[in-house]
Image (tube, rainbow, N blue to C red; front, side, top):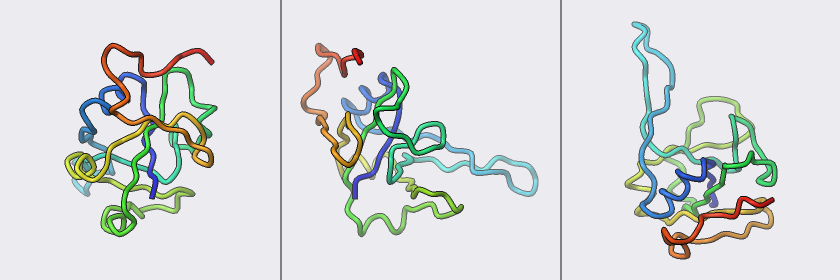
Length: 132
């Protein structure tokens, strides 16, 4: 299944070169008020920006969408089904997702996606053209 990760250009370039890194997401607080975090890479079944699904042509300047292809059988244990969202979301450890798959830069809507792999980039070439 193709999963998506929307981020800024600098982070996208870093991910394409070195892979994903874990980040912490605040899930809430326990009864004593202590924050509860979950570390990992949060991936969704559609591109998301500011908590809402977005068509890639509507992403703000400076933002990109990466995609990864994850085998369906590995999705069951990682899915966050904690709310009634109109989208599905998974949290993988960076180590696991980097071993499973290689991210690609997706430049068009998922229905007609064209992507570029990490190997097509080097530090001497720009990640994307900012001309729109």
